[in-house]
Length: 479
Image (cartoon, rainbow, N blue to C red; front, top):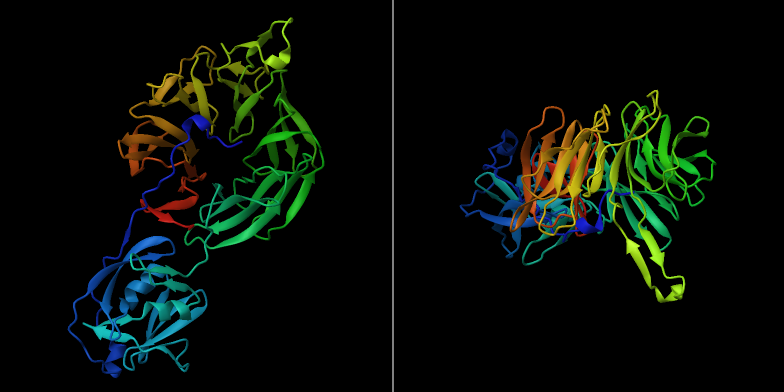
């Protein structure tokens, strides 16, 4: 179950930071002294290109035929190609494909002996400029010379994203609906290159193991599968047919915890070695949700929603919907269960009338974090915590300076998506151990979700597009 509520759904617009190429002029390389090159006094321009869905500013000049030529060095850096000077020419290599630029002959070719793909090459102030369309073609990419922003694509990227989770720190699993059910892809966090991982129907969301190497899911019959994210091979690990919701990995990767039954009445776990299912908590309380498990696998946080009371006049046809619904006391309440405790009973930690979403149990099981939301339109969402030490503990404010839309946990940090001003939202980091917070980024006012890995890697989902945070800057990895 994804921890996003309709009440917090926002517009989807992400302001992606521009990747600025602030490079100095290329220095003279001794290699090129062997091939005299005519130097021209030409004024450089700064042109914005879309490189694999991200804006990049590259130095450009006008070629002899009126085409825009791009700095070879800037181009190589923008696409992540290796740049290697050799005797009389320079080579750009990207994922096994190369292009050769000969500044003396003024040509671009697929190899040192191949016919020229273009003769649009100039050297200005010891900086080589070349036709970007020929460079991209030789490297197996595509180039679109749009008047507003020429587009360079060297990696095929997904064009839409519905859901994403981190799988380690270098890739994400992206899930999209398909005509036959759902398709899950592995996406490279550096450049957006993707590959199909799983095509399925009636399966649950993939839940990634702590080591980032496997993912678990259930089929429509409740059977449990684990897929190896490297070999992409799925293995059935349990044939138990009970309903299993909200799968959670144990820290050591040997078991999966889940909510069992059509009313989520039981907390159970499946042993991955032999597929056996055992009950962890069966307290006859229905409608548990937002399950989270401590690192040692003995402590559990969850919410319970009571169902509203529905009454109807026995003399009135029920088809007329003439019923009275009393929703008092149905607000979600936070519960905590310590399986190792002697009394073996869950404790209700909250009793207030606020709604509680984005439940996160601290790694040691000492606190439960959540976002508190009231029905009052004038109020704001607040990040709060409650101690698991006793049922009389009052909740403590964690962050209340701005409206909190989402809370996620990773690497002993809490990450908050909040309001900022009239035109932007913000991402804050809160130290879960010692407190205190800091602003990580001011972003567009309508990000739908931030995605946090176990180690604190950040991504954001917006308008069907996925972006990752790289050194404080947001980079698109899907179209």
